[in-house]
Length: 163
Image: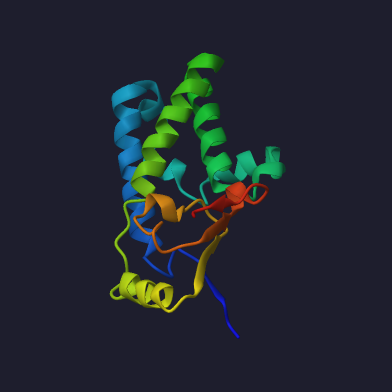
């Protein structure tokens, strides 16, 4: 008998492409307002997956390839340092910038019927879980009331239990 159903989040319950694009735009606007040296030296595309900067970073830090959050944080910190911000400033600014990004990253628009389908499954007594190789968290999307557990690449060693 099936007792639990797990879901990936990105591109299963919402389209991730537009979400990441908007989150990057929000991040860029924050960087422009708070770290003008960054936006004078880099372009928005430097933040995207597949950029030369990210590829170079991953060659130097292969131990973070599993975590899109760690990759983004390290990229921001290194770029800020290259712009002339001190190591302490770069660390603090990268954390603030990342929080801006991650908040925008969770402003998702569910696919039609996604929430109602989850509600039906939940009402039928299934335990619902989220498994993700990214950094989406159901607790930040408005679905926490429907999910019993979540594991993502950033927290694989310490699962996020919703209930």
